[in-house]
Image (cartoon, rainbow, N blue to C red):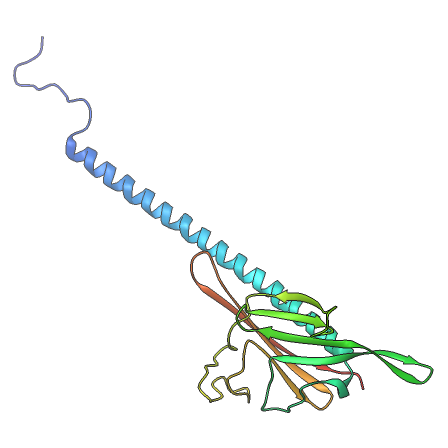
Length: 200
């Protein structure tokens, strides 16, 4: 028999305790979700940066290799710095045969602004012209540059595009800037430049 002054211990949780437990669990799940989402976005950004790094290195290497064997007298146009051009036509120096320099077909490397592409063309304008896209994602202008008639980024060039060639004697300086929007909407940009000496 139970004594009349004592109450039975209650079983379960009160409504207030249940609400507090649900609130704490909700906060924990929300924080875990934020951490997972942040990690996923970080991986996507890293993947976009990695893709861009590989693409800019590969494209710049192709351009430099092509210009390395170009005959310096065939470079067109040959405007010196601070002028630049976003297309360069040249003829490959294939070597010497019987004391004569042997030249290849005309080639052209150019920026197609509307498509943001670097294109290589062999025999440009001919019926049997060959064309290969070396990269997409070319930025409209180099990092820090704006179309305002001023050298915004301090490299000695004015309003230079995402692909720019500067000819100086037997050397060509190549500037390349690629940009790509990641899945998170953030724009990632990479820029490189290099100098190559053409063959005489």
